[in-house]
Amino acid sequence: MRDYILKICGLTDRKQAEEIAYLGATHIGMIYFEKSPRHIDLEKIKEISTGIKGRAKSVAVVVNPAEKTVWKLLEIVDIIQFHGEESMQFVSSFPKEKVIKAFRIKDETDIEKIKPFVEENYTILIDAYSEKAYGGTGKQINPELAKKVVQMHRRTVLSGGLSPENVEKLLRQIKPYGVDASSKLEIKPGVKDLKKVKEFIERVKRFYESDS
Image (cartoon, rainbow, N blue to C red; front, side, top):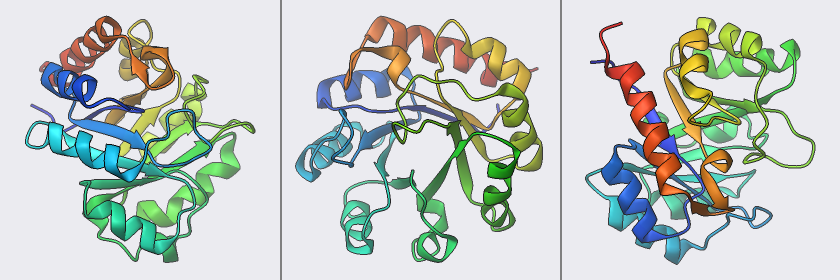
C-alpha cells in the first residue's frame, strides 16, 4: 500500500472532525487565520486535535504568521501548513517533518517559487490562485501545471476544488502524493456534509490502496 495524505480541511467542530478521522482521513485541517470564514481559536484547535489524536494528524493552516504563533500552535497540533508568502528562511525555523508549505499556482512562473522547497524535500501543497482568498475558494488548479509540479516533486499534495465527482479523474491524471479538500464537501463554511466526505474518502482510498 502506498504512503499518502488524505486531508480534509476547514473543520470547526470536534464531533465532525472525529467522525471524519474515523471515516479514514489521514489529516484534519483547521484554519488559524482571522480573515477566513473557517477560522477557529487556539482553544478550539486544541479540542479538535485532542479528539482526533491517534487516528488522524492535526494540521493548523496559517497565513504569514508570527514565529511565536507557530511555536504556540506546534504545542497543540502535529503539523503547520503555511499558506501565505512565507520565505524559506522563515519556514526552515521549524522541524521539516512538521511542515507543509502551500503554493497558489497561477502560471509557470509560480512553479519557480516552489523549487527551493523541493530541493530541501519539504511536503508541498498546490492550490488554485485566487486574488480574493488564500484558499477554500473551490477553484481548481490547471491540471497540466499540477502535473508538472508532481513530476518535479513526489511529495506534492493536490488541493483546489476537489469533490467526490472529480477526484478520481484528477488522481489518475495528476498522480499526486496526496489530496486536500474543503469547500466542495461543505454545507456552509466550516460545516461538512458527511455523506460527501464519506464518498470522497472512499474514492481517494480506492485509488491509493489499489495495486495500480
